[in-house]
Image 1 (cartoon, rainbow, N blue to C red):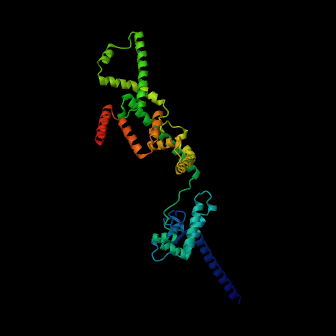
Image 2: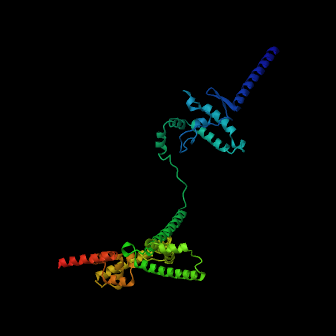
Image 3: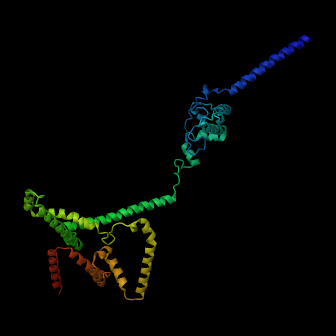
Length: 392
């Protein structure tokens, strides 16, 4: 009896030793960082290839492949895909390896840990995994379900106030340079007309004539002083060759020499002219776009008020006032022509009722005749007289 009990006790000890050994081996397999998958050994520490996937809305794993994140290759599965158990084992292995608490020195540890958790969440959800596999090669289905605007991303919002201020500043700078260029264009034409002594039909004007006369007086004074200096110095600064050259100059050469002498003088005189009239003036703060926008409501309100009163007076058949006649005349001929005219010409234009159609046509014809040369003007007057004679 004792022998049988001893044998039975030894047998129990052997069986318990075998069970403990098997449990220990199973625990060791769970804690390993390397495990067989799809016939190949998986090294968690060397796993860096996360693949790619079309998921701009981040419905799954974003731009990375959920399978690749966990170390599986979707293309090499064949007929058997990784089971939920294999996915869970791989997740545990990688999550332990990349846990932020164990990788405080790695800046990307937290991001990797989150992506690994998301991949595990997608692949262990049967419906989500089925949809994920279906949309892998069907981007059209993805766009239909999650939106067709997945290719676009919105830019950061701009500060509206800063944009408005910037546009106003830019507009003011541009308006200043435009006004400067307008003044410069008129100045260049006036200088050319004065220097070259252009007639009325070629771009000259009474203003260019008076400017040329003033420049000639200044040039005469300069030459007079130069002659006095030469006499005082005994013509020391002028050689005989230079004197002979001056004597042999042709008419065109003398004209060219005179123009070269007049140009700097005329230019200085024009530079002193800040306003040519009709809005052609050197730019000031009033020409900035910001100022124009600010005063526009006032100007607009005044215009509405004047036209309203004018309309009421016309209904009542009240005779035109001097102010109304002037405004109507200025509107008819234009601001440029009005400003360019002298006070006497302005008074004469007001009396002619130029806002009436036929009166305006006669005035325009007279202005065209004034631009003709004296010979053309005489020819025009003769033709006009002949035309009147035939009518009579």
